[in-house]
Amino acid sequence: MNYTAVIEHCRDTGLYVGYVPGFSGAHSQGETLEELNANLREVISMLLEDGTPNMETEFVGTQQVVVP
Image (tube, rainbow, N blue to C red; front, side):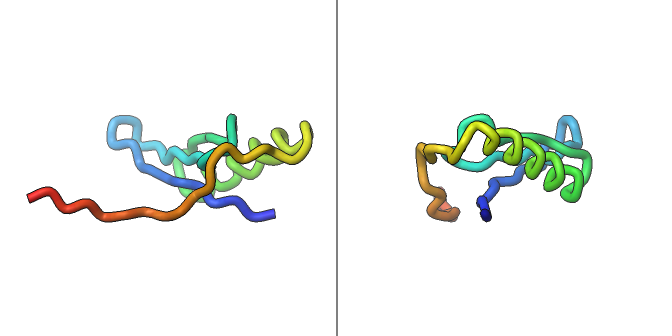
């Protein structure tokens, strides 16, 4: 199954942080994008052991907001 993760880079720690919107507990971090991806796969796999998640929200996309 495929999940969409939102990924950010923390300037303070230098870590990549990712989470799956609406999937409670599906979040992790890593020093590289590859490490983050592996960590997210592991977390999601563990969460799926409890059964199919009840997704609280649906990822729609991103939007640029222009503030004059």
